[in-house]
Length: 337
Length: 208
Image (tube, rainbow over all chains, first blue to last red; front, side):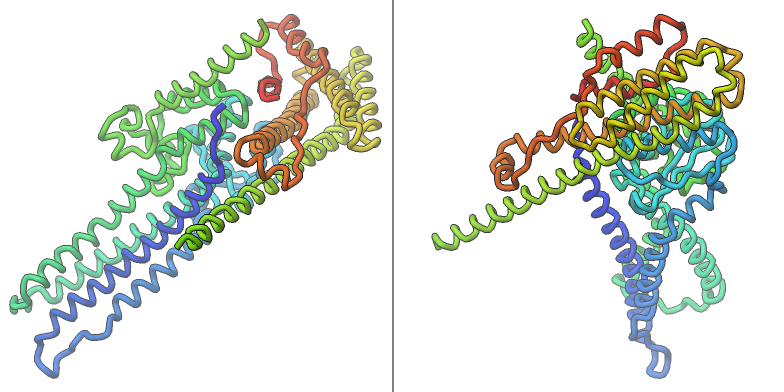
């Protein structure tokens, strides 16, 4: 079986989370200080008594705000993600299916050698599952009611193994932080758009003097473009981060369960269920085992899918798992005969 | 200039030595921890079985011998475990016998559909499956970790440090009992549907 270098994987995820947060703060610092600079250039030639923007207030405030947001997102990301899906925690399972879920999670936690995560159920008829948290000691695992309803015990095991793979190699830290930051960017962008619109309404007619020079103009354009692009960049980051990880988590699941065919058939069932997972919103899509939005892009391989899909093509994942399963059967057959 | 190069080389070599040594120690502790996890799961199984058997005793009056075999195997396993971890061979034999007895109980339950319909028995089946899985997953983790540990010790150039760190190859948990291997066959011959107990045990054999 493939040797997955867990240590390197964890290290890479720690590093990526760090740089993600740094990038986030730097981006906001650029927005702030850039704005300051533009405002400085704009007011430099103003009359003596008019306001001169010399102290970089915007930059300082935005950088500090970004730091605070990043810290807050990192700390409360898991709760926010769970809250956004309306999941309920399974603490004292009564229903036999829930009892089985708890058992399966305990088994897989043993196989993965990590503490048992807290278990949540999302009341959604579409089968799906996701994991969130900052590290294996503080992790959460959520499945939809639909998944519990259609999966056999072995299939459930495969899906849970996949999610615990994400937990074990610290994918959850990166992906949860990203989800929280994407949410924050979207929120700030909406807020900023409102401010911009208000500002333009007030000062549009007085915009007479255009002697500021080309530098100011170029800066202004770049700056506005960055504001507009912020949510798109955040989305693209979310996409790039999640796709390769799905193959890896599939492989880890196979390593834990030693039963790749069960996960393959679970994926087939999840793929077969038509309805999108309505409880899971776009912001958390990259955390799930299968694209909750049911986008057609996920069904294909190719440039467009590579750029825009959060998940690798289901057909390819299933094919890889089946390959593993048949290789295993063949080896066993050889051993017996 | 020459001494400077020598110094740089020394730093690299010492740095590598420290890294390799610490890596081995970390793997050793992981292996020990994984071994303790097997113990934890076996204890759990021993504690659970009497309760489970009591819960279904009434419903399964006609299969008394199967139940008694389970209890007996369980008591034997508890006794051997109390003897201490040195008796690893006996422990693994006793535990394998217990696994066999439990599998037979599950096969029996499968054979009586009206029995399966009782909620108690359904619960029993789920608990037994889960218990057996937990034990075999704990062993699987131990075997995986121990294999990694052993490989690291034997591979060049880490094997040069292995002597220094005084590490020993860890024993893998193997299934020696022929009866244990035969259990899935009983499943196949007695019933059409696929066995309830899933595959993990298979991987263990090939890993070892």
